Image (cartoon, rainbow, N blue to C red; front, side, top):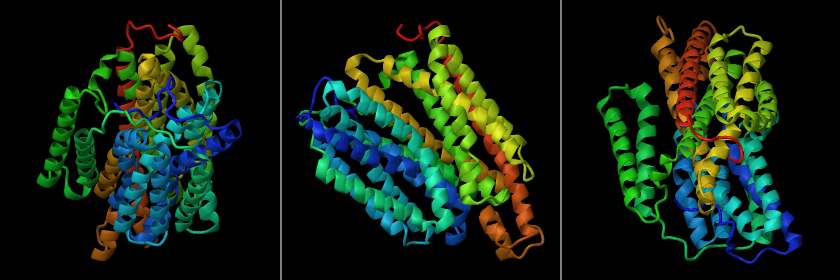
Length: 505
């Protein structure tokens, strides 16, 4: 696997002068926050985007997932490009693409164009994210490196939540294009800071980029996700759709076979023989699968069914963040006392139970009922996230710590992309199957079938029928997410059986 972070025992460039370390850290964390926030922030604006663009539920899925999918698929090869040709160059190119794409996205109301531009933003984000951490680890002296990495990790974790609230505020004051305008401003600031403060660092002797492996991974993931998202419209048994899914699986199988033969693979499949590494990767992937899929659903529920404002919908997620903090603090203590297996599996089961409880919500549920479900969801996430991340890194020798960092990032982004694709598809299928369009004019019926946002424009009784269908589809979606996380809990319990998982062992 290519390194997305420089080897800690080898600086690729002279360390920056002491006076520049804080500036370098601020600029890299600003760049990181800009691309991570974009993963979640647009979910808040989905109802407004649907009304302005006339996008169907399937197109809304693509608007969100085009970014996540390209981001995840290009993360490893983009990290390798930065390591080999220069991390500062990767930052500059990535931020330029991200800013330019955001500027164009603010000017369009065509859903197809918006999907393409979000994919362009994903290319930029894939160049930016690994270059930020690599810059810190390759230019900071050893005595400052740990603090720099800790700050990076904190920003990576908090940026998505901050993005939700920032988007809510912007939508209260302006309209949804302002989200992309903010992206432009942040990208320009990070770009200027990179030019002024960030030194160049690279590893010219790094292995050559595995172009064939990268192409196989991108094509395989793209074909598979396309088939999943389009299935509700084309039909799950549609020959083209089924063929696309099979082609995607075949390409991914080819990727695995190719990587097994490579001396310097992008991703070495043999690493998954280490049970703790496999458990950590599976857990992170499934947690972010559920998190981003649930976010895609809950934001539409709060704004279109509960008729909350964008800011109120973002604030409604606070109980989840409030639960995550004590869960993350409690997890290491429980691990020290009982080993990682118990708290880890308990956290996943708590997440699964909370997601299943979302199926009890309906159009008349109170804010307290929503909060009562979201708090344990955050608590379980905090309990499970820390041991999963630790397992990925501690399962590997010190020479492969860069691989652990890369795999943790990949699991997060890939899980999010797959969650939006799969759970978005379940939501669309459930909604289209349930919405009652009997007796409606053809044009109204087509609009009602396309999305809840489109149906809401016609008022009652069309909007009421659509809301009932959406709530039913939401129940199917969160139960699917709960099932995935529950299966992950079982898999983690089995993988960790008989292994030493206490801290320091």
